[in-house]
View 1 (cartoon, helix red, strand yellow):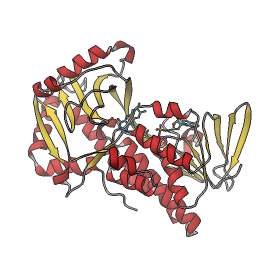
View 2 (tube, rainbow, N blue to C red):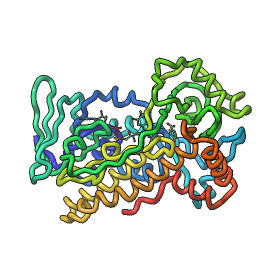
View 3 (cartoon, rainbow, N blue to C red):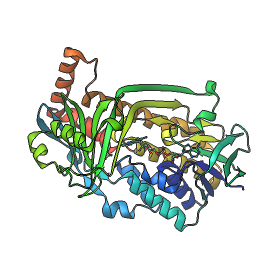
View 4 (tube, rainbow, N blue to C red):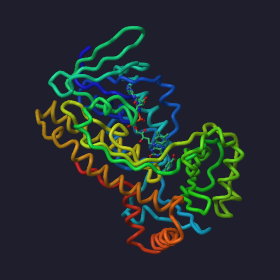
Length: 392
Ligand code: FAS
Ligand code: PHB
């Protein structure tokens, strides 16, 4: 098989890139190692920046997000038993975020791709990428007992943190930066009414908690747990009891509990691989970088990488210009590092670290007090949370 762009990975980055390339008349094949149901079964992000919403609209898949998503104008910070609202809308001149689960974004993208009969290979095994430092990159994979080959002009590595693309780059061509946090997020998805109309980020003596949602009847909650915890150590009942312990009295009384539709622990790390381009191989999304989910940036960074790559490839094919692909990595990384900084800062501010000590705790308390009582500090939080503009 021959195509213009071979996309590795049918997560949000790969699927969004496929749709955007299609709108520009650029042919692409997506090769995914898992089944569609497996991809949809992963419960992940919940907050979309306007930049992401705009890209979904440009891909022709934003209708349901606009119809069913929940526009949010603010978030609440809970610490020392008090809740403080950060008015995102007022502090950023009218910007907001959309609460709409990654699962639904993926579902919308899958449906659009199927409706357009665009080629997607699921359950592909032993996917490998070849000759991307030359003019004729290739992808090989096994399916139904046969080995298949795709020749292409470019390969988009949208295969996530554990994917094959970054791993196929010679080690001396790559520089990585990483910070692993001493805790994870134990998450529960449940069909219960959310405890609050907006998200609550809590920093308590017992640790961090986040109250989020997917709709007016489906909630998503997280608890900071030690990195050594396993999901088997937690019952649903223990989860609800610990969450209630980390909420203020009013929220604790409003908390509706119920069976968990999904319960999992996500490790937290900050990670960046530089550069994001190797000849005719481009990395996008989690394949190139990971942020702790505190700032709700992971999915949104994947979308902005894809926005840059789409524009670059459209310039190459339609305007015969290589300027976009030559500047892709630098443009992505400037935005990536700003999001890495914000995600690291917000994680450091809202979580309890084993080695903080008495002075460190006083610093955290003072920063939280300053943050909610300074318009300048709240504005800095707000403009990062709603997402920095996409500089095309
Ligand atoms: P993805 O990992 O979503 O998709 C990569 C795809 O490539 C997968 O479908 C995988 O099966 C496929 N693949 C991998 N190797 C392959 C190979 N060799 N061949 C073919 N296909 C291959 N972000 C937030 O903003 N908020 C959150 O709360 C949040 N929670 C998260 C929880 C977890 C457990 C994880 C892992 C991430 C979380 N994230 C969160 C971040 C997450 O939303 C990512 O940013 C987002 O999925 C990035 O999308 P992709 O780059 O498409 O990568
Ligand atoms: C979620 O709803 O899954 C979510 C929301 C905000 C975050 C992280 C996760 O910062």
